[in-house]
Length: 578
Image 1: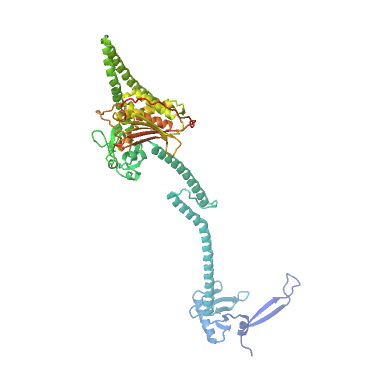
Image 2: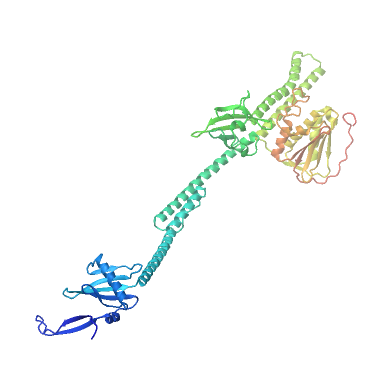
């Protein structure tokens, strides 16, 4: 009375007394393969199982409760078998929009007798959900893998790209002139590490080389700045690229920016005697005389050289200031002119009177005495000129031997007064003395100070008319412990503009050929040089119509001992009373 079904029998051989003999008995076990068995044997989760047997095929057992589902399944299996067929006894068909996933496998009796097909299905929703779960898992795995790869790439990039980026930044700093830039620290042994260490070695070498070049450039700049000759260099276009301080001073300019970048012919005006422009890059000159014309209209005598730069485009212009040379030439000319005049003036009467005395032996004694006195006076003038030249030469050559001693100022001035009253008796009454009381001695070499006072007195005598007082003054120097010794006159005075050249050799206030007062122009120069060498401050106070006063501040020596006043007898004056 049971429902028809499919039974599977399994026969197991019994015990074999003889291993090579046939079995003597068998155990038979049977299972009815019906829908109940299939339902009990298949798990849930949307899976379905069906047994298809017979010809034509029919569903013998299944997990489907609705026969229509069995018919649909059988149609799907038949259609699947018609298209690809069983390959190796198996067939798999993926789920579609309205069909489930299908897996078919044939099962046989152990000796190859076909029994039927086993069809396993799963609903489309469950399959799609499974696919979605698989895809989701795959996507998550892909995302996780991508994240891991990105993290590894980031770490690798940091390890590789970051040092390269630092090297790039360091290279940019080096290109901008910062030679202290270095590669990334703690570089490894890979190619980036080797590159970083090589980069550091390169920048270190560049820094040392640049330091050497900078030192050389600084030294060259120092040398150029210390040159007394002016130097200007140009590029191939004739524009000035550098100029030292001497060149700027000769051109009357204050800063290099006033000439650098300008064309040479526009910034520098150097002309020869004919007025031709010599600051022309096309010219080639070797030590040619010229004059620099400054913007203020003044000129500077120079020697100019213009040559091309070796192994470079451009020229170099060298200017040598010859103001001193021209001044020396002028002084030589003035010296020869003044010396010849000063020696010829006394020589003329000496020679004339000597000729008279030699040619006329019978002259009266009084006339012979007059001629001899004139010869003696003129020879003394010549001797004074020669002595002055010798003294100036000694000072210039540094052969002056100074032996300072404590000297009484009053005695020093009295000695000069007596000497000049004898030398110029016609001015004896004009020479006076004023000495402050209580002055200390002065620690000086009386011989050289007397020579300086003689030149100051001689200057006052020559430039003042007879009857004009000339006073020797000794008083404390203001603000110091020195003693100021002055020669003061009431003559015409000296204009302020002419006072700057008073102590220049061979210079006179009136330098014309028709000047009233003769002389070598060395007296005040001698005084100034003597005061400079001895360290005596020299002062000049003069104004037109107010006379002149030349002063020397002499260092004080030991104070003089107290002496009782000496009563002197009045003496007759050597001339009319004043």
